[in-house]
Image (cartoon, rainbow over all chains, first blue to last red; front, side, top):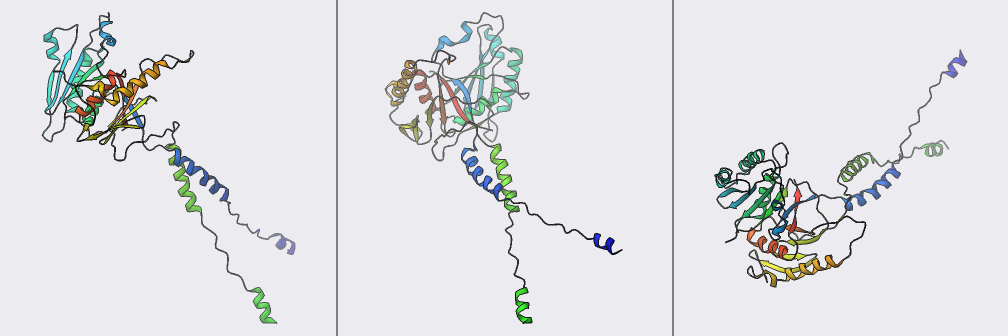
Length: 171
Length: 166
């Protein structure tokens, strides 16, 4: 009985503390390094060209039967004026592709309407991918970028008019 | 005697342990955040204070070409301030005679240097060089037009507009 009682001793569980000092050392080295190399602003780029070297225009080289339409978007203070250029279409067809989108009551441009119209043209002439943007002198750079954004992708993230030529009004 | 024994047996107050569990939690969260935002292309770009780039849904990465920065106060090419802006007009730039501007001369020099530099035989052809253009979103097109026209005349018709990812 006494032997049983002697064996029956409760083992004291020793509390072991995890030594976190080496982990803290590692953090104190890694965090300043990561802070210095962290990027909080992500820069992207929009490819644009200016109409200087006309011989690079691909329409002259195209011998394909696909109809390509170049949309011309004039950004005015009163809104968008959209017209179309194409060697394969006559004046009447091109006139049908144009439209005017006035600014809203609060002075906001109709980017969504413009994107819908561009999508309609793209669905009709899928080979088209170039647009010419002609802003008025007072139009802000931010508005120009938003116009390019609205014209780049459709709602389904399909490419619309990714090739942009930026030009001032001539004449 | 009994009192001396009592004094020896007197328990010392326990040494307080530093609770670093909370600090560990905080460091772990900060580490995860910084690891996620770690940039594999660590490049330093100096933009003017107060310069606001436009936001865009563009997904293309920029290329490391000649950098042109147009803020509301200065026009800078590859870190060198070329001229100042006053009321959104670039000093020293005549819209009717862009070839006489400092910007045109400098860009032409960069272009000639790039053409004179022999390319590696094994490297792929790069085609036309690009100009990486940083512009403040509040500037009107009238100001920008002079700059991009000058760039086009100097042999940089292809531009990359730098934007912030949305």
